[in-house]
Image 1: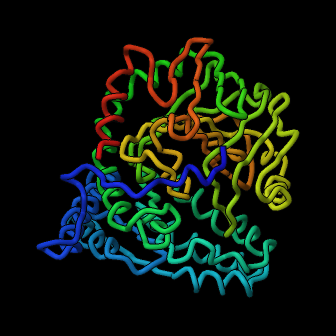
Image 2: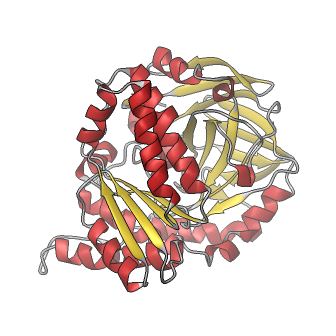
Length: 401
């Protein structure tokens, strides 16, 4: 099925959440809702305490940053804000060398070291802004600076990554900005530590599963997760939240999978990615730009192996947006990440890349089936087991117009 068919039609989102611009001016309504998001991030996601130092690292001038500053002060904590626009980052990378990137990295890591918490906010104005940056320098930037910073942040008990809804992201999703903002705000309904109880049946099911089988158009893939731990993304480290993930045993992945959601990375868009695996390693690749994708996979040995298997559970997200920050949480989807594995639910794979590739199994995207130990667990994005029926109700409510 052509990946273009996946781009969502313009539609209204749940009446009480639609952020239409009327009476109060639209933006005022959104500001009120955004204040609630800022409060959630400070008090529920990060659980900030008086005296803690928080680095807010933003790539754009958007209204959430000043709201976060206020909420951080309200919590008795101390905000430090660093804003560097994508255009500035681009020029820093374009003229960089290994030495300049290492200097930049040391400076950033030194500042982060003195912090108790970290918030990284991406606010894209052009999703293709890095298209004309030399690929070798872009990869070196990710290797020497971006990934070490995220690794250092993830070593702290309090850290958070989020992708702010901008015009560029809305255009990529073929949505109005109001729709994307409504989705972002509504994701708070499906985040929070209380969700551990709601999604506990999924976690328990994963932990007693040995073999996973994924079937969709162009897809017949199997692997083992026997004995592997799982982790729920509840918005405490990644917002929007709403996925549960584990990792296949390294040599157990066999078969082929076709990802029907476009993957954006390094300033490029890859569509219709098809991977064929043999004993855990990618042995064949085709996509809209196979040569560029192979270049990403060729960075190290771990880039051709799977470091993560995840299931999307967020019913506020039912259409691809164009960034894994949203798409991997999409209800009715699964994803595999080529590259580095997360230690809390990992398989030991080590890589300088982590590429989340998403397959939607919702009916409108071609459908599909997910089996655990040959038991059908989800069909066309709908859970089939009695103990998971409450998740289907949320999906129907979340996708209502």
